[in-house]
Structure formats: structure tokens, C-alpha cells
Image 1 (cartoon, rainbow, N blue to C red):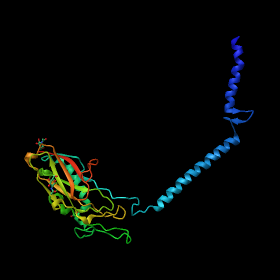
Image 2 (image 1 turned 45 degrees about the horizontal axis):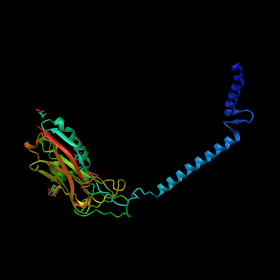
Image 3 (image 1 turned 60 degrees about the vertical axis):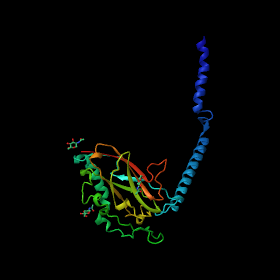
Image 4 (image 1 turned 30 degrees about the vertical axis):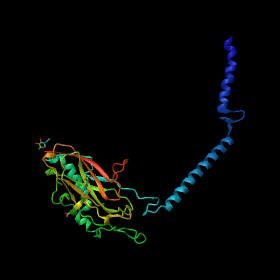
Length: 280
Ligand SMILES: *[C@@H]1O[C@H](CO)[C@@H](O)[C@H](O)[C@H]1NC(C)=O
Ligand SMILES: *[C@@H]1O[C@H](CO)[C@@H](O)[C@H](O)[C@H]1NC(C)=O
Ligand SMILES: *[C@@H]1O[C@H](CO)[C@@H](O)[C@H](O)[C@H]1NC(C)=O
């Protein structure tokens, strides 16, 4: 009978399959003896310990060479991006409805806390129009130049606590990203334009001319330059009735310096675009 003939062959198969896990004759587990397994495990243990040790050693050497005050690997100083406050690419509000613009006003107010005139009294009154260079070797802590929010005049939130939003002439604050060691050449200023309107939209800039003083450069880094505040430029869009209910595209650029503001690939380098729409 076929079934009885098959049985021995079947038994043989089962035992050889079992043997491959544990073979009692040779005392092999998965084809290796206990001492062979022990050697392999020992090898991998030593190998991984060695790898971990190498990693820890290189990290340690790397960290030793890092200086908290000066970033080490810096071949060239990058160009800064330009950002706006309130931090929104679309500023839309109803000038007659405080609920619609209160988030912008609150945002500006909290942003300007650091620029409080009383707070800034603690910082240096630096000479205008010159870089505020500080000795690297001396005391590691750097002094910061004063920037009082009062210099933003009508956009300071002091005389007009609504930053112009309640009268439909909103203020927008601009600042350049902090870049360690950046020293802009020339006399940088902010220039904003409203695109695609047949008539020019009037604006006023604070401080006057939208100027960014050189005294706020260079920046020495977060740890060394603790009290540093970025210089601000406020632009007040003097909108009239004709400008309401329209989406206006505003573009602001840093001009008058060697800072890049027309990079094809990065549209935030030295410039920023945002939309403004006011309804009443
Ligand atoms: C703006 O707010 C005022 C007052 O709440 C309201 O009368 C007016 O209809 C609003 N305008 C628009 C376009 O929603
Ligand atoms: C900001 O300055 C005003 C006076 O100019 C002061 O009353 C207020 O407490 C200051 N706020 C902060 C957060 O320092
Ligand atoms: C501001 O930019 C506009 C458009 O690019 C230009 O026509 C104008 O002359 C600039 N103004 C200043 C003061 O640079």
C-alpha cells in the first residue's frame, strides 16, 4: 500500500527537520554547536561595542572643538530674509469691526514688548551709521544697541494703540532675519510698493526713510548677544476709500545695500510680499 511505503520517508523528513533546529547527536543548535554560537555572539558584542565607542569618541572630539560663542563652520555669510509682523501673508480686516483686527493689534503689541522704551534704556546708545564692532577676545558677552519702539512713531502702538487698523491705515513691521556676522554694505532701507494699481498708494516709513541703521550689525549670536534686538522698520499704508474692498499686493524690499533682494529661487531673500484688504 502506498500509505505504508510513505511512512518511513515521512519520519525521516520530520527527524531531519527537527535536527536542523536541534541535533541531539552532534549537539548542534541551528547547525552550530554551543561554543560556535558563543563565539559568534562574542564577536558581535565586541564589534558593536567598538562601533559605539568609535561614535562616542568622534562625537566627543567634535563637541570639544565647538565653541559656544562662535559658530565654527561658516565659509560665507548668507543673505537675510525679510519677514513681516503681524505674521500673516494676508492682512484682511473690517476697519469698523474691532473683532476683525484685534488679533493683528494684539500680535503687534506683544511683539513690541521687547522694544519697550523703558526696557531698551538698559541697552547701549550706539553711535549712528557705524557698525557696532565688539572685541572678540575681551568679555564674551556682547552689548546690544538700543531700539526703542518710540522711534516707530505712529506705528509704535503708543500714540495710536490700534496701529492704524481702526482708521483703515494699517501698520506693518518689517525685520531682517538675524545672521551672525552680517555687515550690510551701503545704507540699507526698506522700500515697499503696491503692485498693479493705476495710482500710487501712499505710505509712510518709520524710522524716516525706512532706514536700517548699521549700528545693529554685526550680530554675534544668541548666547553672546543676549539682549540683541533686530532693528525694525514700520510701514503705514495710507489707504483711502478707493483702496478699500480691493486685494492689494504689497512687496517690500531691502534696498540701498549689497543685500540680495531679487533672487530667482528664494523670494524671501531681502524681500517679502503680502496681501492687504480693508473693508469698512
Ligand atoms: C464691517 O463692520 C461693520 C460694523 O460691524 C458692518 O456694518 C459692515 O457691514 C462690515 N462690512 C463688511 C464688508 O462686512
Ligand atoms: C512698557 O513700558 C511702559 C512705559 O513706557 C510700562 O508701563 C510697561 O510696564 C512696560 N511693559 C513691559 C512689559 O515692560
Ligand atoms: C521703490 O521701488 C520702486 C519700484 O521698484 C521704485 O520705482 C522707487 O524708485 C523705489 N524708491 C526708492 C526710494 O528707492
